[in-house]
Length: 240
Image (cartoon, rainbow, N blue to C red; front, side, top):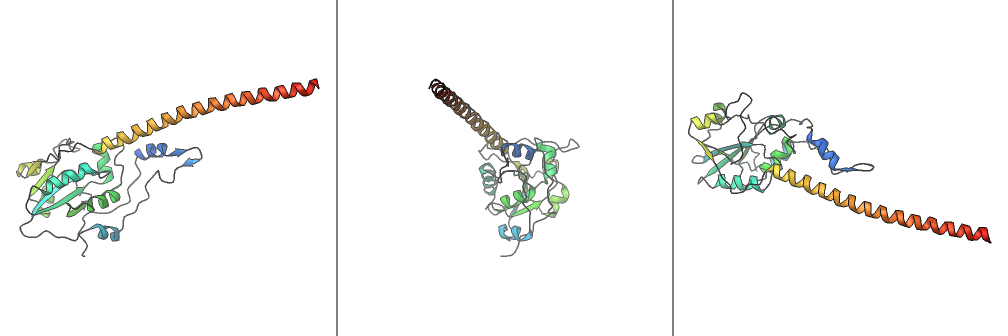
């Protein structure tokens, strides 16, 4: 199997503020959980090759470009890519992944959760994806469309945030009439997953706190009974 051409510069992502929250969720009395905290994942060319199919676009293929963070790669992403894959007889889907700093600029809230290396391998593992552009520009430029000979640009039903200059990141494909909105029928998003995780974690902690409070109350009663018993023994010893 030949390695797929994966474009862009692979870099070690800087830590983002969301990881402080992740650390707090993983705290235990004597330190941090070994499974929670700052990701130490490092990308290598060999890892990319292992996940890449090596498929090149062929004459007659419809080259479709989609872009985004694809963070915490989930079934919502898969359903979207599957729907994109179905709109052409011979689709060749290129996914543009934005660098971590870019994602943080337009999503805020201390995203992304997964760094660009982890997101790259997650997307490459999807059967509907033919190629990944690592560090794709936020706005879909004429140079990008021409370079990859893109026939169609697709976006899901999620909000499109304007670029830093206030412009529409899809204005060029719209100008060329090659832009299409795709409704996957699945409204699951990374935001919803994160909210579920935090909600479940808080509920878990609340249950544990109630349980601990009850246990402490029982221990206190047992302690008082033990002290009272010791006092009775002491009085008997004094009387004897």
